Structure formats: C-alpha cells, structure tokens
Image (tube, rainbow, N blue to C red; front, side, top):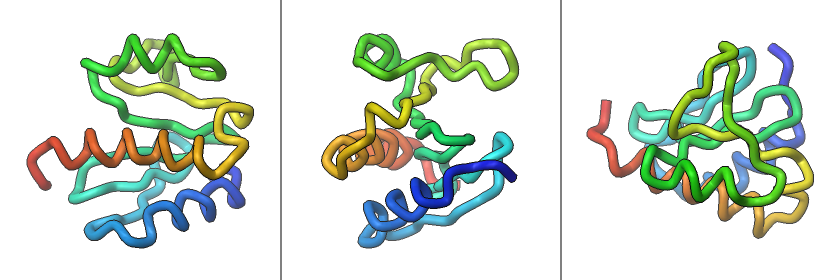
Length: 109
C-alpha cells in the first residue's frame, strides 16, 4: 500500500476528536471512514476528499485540486488535493472537515 505516512498522521491528528472514525485500506492507499462512510484518505502523496456532488465543481475550482480519476474515469463528488494545497495545518483541517461533514450527512453504515 503506497501512501504518505506523514500525511496519514496529520489526518489522524485532525480527526482525533471525531467519534466513529475507522481506517481502511482502499484505492491503493488509506481511507478514513466516518460512521462507515468514506470522508477522506491518502493515495500516494495526495489527499483524497469526498466532497459530495453539490460541492464538487467548487472544490475543483480551488488551487492544487484535481478530479479523482483512480480508475481513469472521474469519480463525481471526490477530488485529489496535491501536497501544495495542504501544506499548512489549517488547509488540511479545512479539507478533512469538508470530507467529514459530507460523510456525516449520509446515513451511517
């Protein structure tokens, strides 16, 4: 499983006070599940965030963000954030918060 372990630790720190968080190997990296729904994860050196369909286009308009196309097909509602977009803790917390908020909007699994 290839993923940036330091980024995973930073995400764990952001999610440390969140209940219902579980880690799972997924997409060739590490995913963080909230109440059974994927919120975010790490693939290689990128942050993967599930922003949902309503926030998808807005997320793609932000710097250092690209569509998630893990299977060479865009996954609507999911984006990759490059390391430059999460360089500081506030930027990472913002993205992880968006993923967590969307995951919590779904029925628990």
